[in-house]
Length: 146
Image (cartoon, rainbow, N blue to C red; front, top):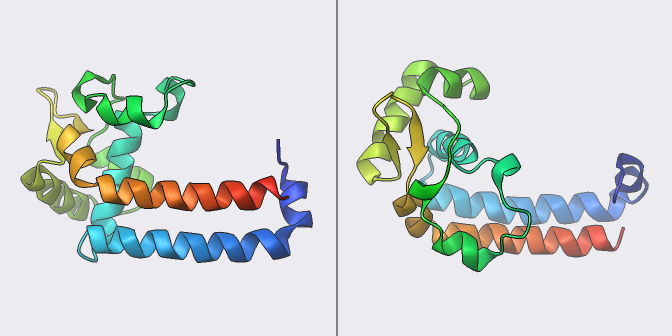
């Protein structure tokens, strides 16, 4: 496993590749959200709570992930206030972004008012997921060389 020291010792090779790859990914994110970075960030936070890392099966591959219904997951509770507190985005801005995401069918509220991402978001944003895979693949190559 790489340590912080490993990264710092090979920083001159890793950092520029990271910045270049991340920049390309963020440009795709911006395009996918019509230039609205806050909308993207709010959905990312909701997605993180809908499919949290600690509940992801370690042996899950991309095909299994892509065919799993979001509605079958056990999400963690999240609401407007917790998104605002976590992100620093003002509560009213989060509320507006949430409305836009609901209108797109990308998120839904349950009967308790908690918010989850939907399978429609996963399907509609599949090209962005592929862009993230390209970013991760590039970083894996760079980090394997460290």
